Image 1 (spheres, rainbow, N blue to C red):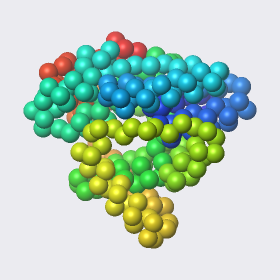
Image 2 (cartoon, helix red, strand yellow):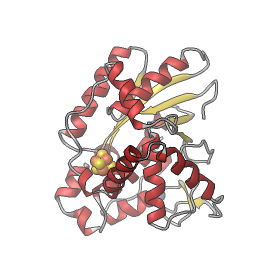
Image 3 (cartoon, rainbow, N blue to C red):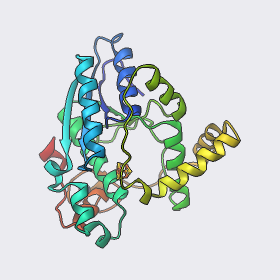
Length: 268
Ligand code: SF4
Ligand code: ZN
């Protein structure tokens, strides 16, 4: 996933998983003088919940002392907060869930933040649990033509992504965070209950408790079923990122919300 001379942007939301990843990667990176680590944070504009997380991130990073921190926000990049477009009813009118807007635009915002940080790779704190949830959600939507999650793929116009905790169960990350005094959030996202992921998470957690090892088996099975993508990538007509569609998903969502796409170069 990582090279000896990478500048690694770690996506730090302020939650325990991302702070644990930052701590682990900063520790490993000390043995590789040609590499460096930088934290990148996206503020989606979810009052109370994200405000608390960003406070945790800032405190933790300032105590680490040696890691730069690049922050971007939906407000700065797209002109609105997630709360704005949910409360005004625009998300409902666009026929999408808050988590879809949040997830798709956060991906874009992280890419912009990683470029600003001069990163050669972007590491996210997705755990084994997260990855299996994603595979199952994709399968239930009929979306099977996917690449393995978190495996480095170099595409012109996007910072490659890796998921170093992909084989680590969430429970182990929780234990690591607890033992290292990493702060836990007291607030949950107010939109989490509206997501399909929430239902899938509950189901998989119950199943893993009853039949330990299920998550690993599921991950291996999903990846065996994956076929190399046959989609031909082209540049999004609105922003220029590589996509299999005429207009990428981020620009499609922005246009449904009445906002223009954000050209990658403008924000790099
Ligand atoms: Fe965003 Fe949904 Fe996660 Fe909340 S639960 S942070 S809205 S993806
Ligand atoms: Zn686009």
